[in-house]
Length: 313
Image 1: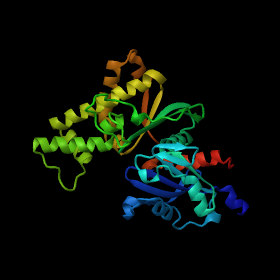
Image 2 (image 1 turned 180 degrees about the vertical axis):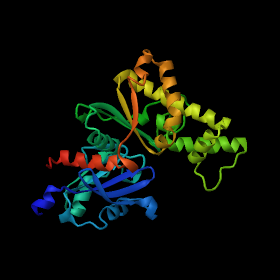
Image 3 (image 1 turned 30 degrees about the horizontal axis):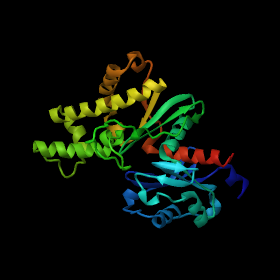
Image 4 (image 1 turned 90 degrees about the vertical axis):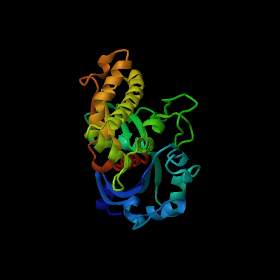
C-alpha cells in the first residue's frame, strides 16, 4: 500500500441487526458505500451468503481489514456464541473464517460495543455515559474513562419473572427485550387493535400506527405508551441504582420515534421506584440522541474498535 493509502485507514464494516445487514467502508468517522440488505432485497441466511455480501466489490489490497458488529455474545472477537438476530452464525469462528476466505485481518464485536465506541468517538467530551439502543431489541454498554466498562446484555435482564412471561429471541423468558423491545411492542399493538376491532392500515407499520394514534390522543394508544414507558422506567431505575449515570445516549428506530413522548413517563416511573429521586432529575441524568445519523455510530465504532484491537495508527 502507498503511504497515502495507509494513512487513510479503510475498514470494510458489516453490521447485523434485527432488520438485516448493512455494509460500508469506513475511513475514520466517514462512512462510504453503504449497502443495506433490506433495501436491496438481499437474503442472508448462512455463512456463505454473508461472506458473499461482505466481499462484494471488495479489493483486499485496498482495505486494512473487515470488522463485524453483531448482537449477542462474542468470544475473543472471533466466535459468535449466541446471536439472537443471526442464529445461523452461532458457534462459528467468524473472524477466522472470514480471514480464511479473504486473506485480510478480521474481528467481530458486539453491536452495542461498536455503537458505544462510535458514540464516544463523536462525543469526546463525555467520559461516563450509557449508550442504549431501543429498536427491534434492546442493548446497552457503559462507557467510562475512555473504555467500555464491561460486557453487558442489558436487554436480557429479567423484567417479568412469572411463568407466563413472554419468550425472548434468545430463548429465555421475561427479558426486557421480550416485553418492551420493538418486536414485542409490534406484537402488542397487533393484539390490542385486533381485540378492539381496529384495523391497522395496510400501508402502516404497527409501531408507526401506534405513534400516530398516540399523537391523536386515542385512549388505547395512550395506555400502551404508558405501559411501555413504565417498563423502561423500571428497567432504567435498576441500571441507575447501580451506576449513577450522568448521561444516557439513545439510538434505535423506536427511541427516535417515541422517546420524546415517553421520556416524562420513563422519568416519572424511575422517580417513583428510586430510593433517591434526585438521581433522575434532568440536571443529574441527561438524555440525548446519538450524534451519528442513520445508526452509523456502530459502523464508525466497530472500525475504531478494529483499529484499537490491531493497534493500527
